[in-house]
Amino acid sequence: DYGWSYAHDNGRRGADRMVPGVTSSYIENVRDEGAPAAISTLLAQGVDLVIACSFGFMNAMVEAAAKNPDKYFVHISGYKSGAAPGADRMTPNLSTAFAEFYQLYYLNGLAAGAVTQSGVVGYVGAFPIPEVVRHINAFVLGANVAYRRRTGKNIKAYVNWIFSWVDPPKARDAAIALIEETGADVLAYTEDTPTVLQVAEEYTTKKGKRVWSFSHYSDMREYGPNAHLTGQIVDWSPIYAEFYRMILSNSWRPVDIWARIGDMMDWRWRRPVEESLAGQPEGVVYLAPLNPAIPSEVQLEIKQRYEEMKELLFEPFSPEGNLGEPIRDQDGNVRIGPGQRADREALWNMDWHVEYIETPLPR
Image 1 (cartoon, helix red, strand yellow):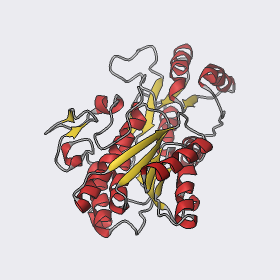
Image 2 (cartoon, rainbow, N blue to C red; image 1 turned 135 degrees about the vertical axis):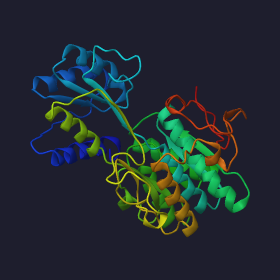
Image 3 (cartoon, rainbow, N blue to C red; image 1 turned 180 degrees about the vertical axis):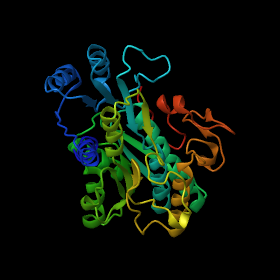
Image 4 (spheres, helix red, strand yellow; image 1 turned 30 degrees about the vertical axis):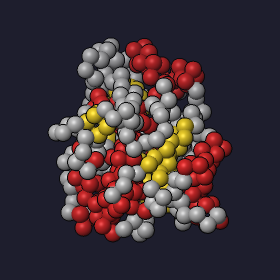
């Protein structure tokens, strides 16, 4: 795992360095059914804070928070924060947090649409849950914008689901199938290893077929130096450190952190495009370096949109993110019309594919 778990471990270590006097430990390879025992083990060690890094740990965290009001709990990727509207006020010691990527996926899509020669992009998906679906949709919307501006044609996108977060053999097979069977020459993915990028590298350097891919959660350039376009990266340490400081300063309050571009940065306003740090570490979520193969005008567009999203001046899930047109699903139904943009509820519950995706969404 060079993705989700690796990034969280880096975040934990980084937060320990940021906040003097804090030490942390971890338990790995915990399945959903093992969450209660793992939480109990940590509490028995005398920890002040438990951070759980899987959606499936949610109920165990709620129960533990209710039973241990003198301890603090943070659930990554959940929604049962003690701060949420209608939340269970029995757990004011439970917060939630997430580092959200859909904006970065849209920017990746702009890069993909600018370099594809086949007009086909592919996506290796873990599970068809709203988080992954919105990432796929954002990627394809961005790809279509750049490709249609170049060619006057719509992009075609295909998704291969592997129903696993970490499975290199399945990810490899899915990536190869997208290349061989659909003609995709740019591959994005949600699978926590560099496998898809490695497949793109193999095709580019050994099989005579140019295929591009991305980093996911961590900087993976070393695994595909000739195939790496850009990517989505997260630094969890500012989020972890925020909770450390609350506890140390006796200022805890339940919160729901959903970090997007612009959050937890030193300078939280947009920069002039020529000074943009897009492609460099900045805040919680940021882009991997931009490959010079991305045309200069598209690099400028990526930087402009990146800076605008810091202040929510641009939203991918809006007509503006779709060349001014309403965003439709695969059945042609308008999902986001003129003057609209996706709100939190729409993003959290996204269960439909945009019209440019050829693969049906599993039900």
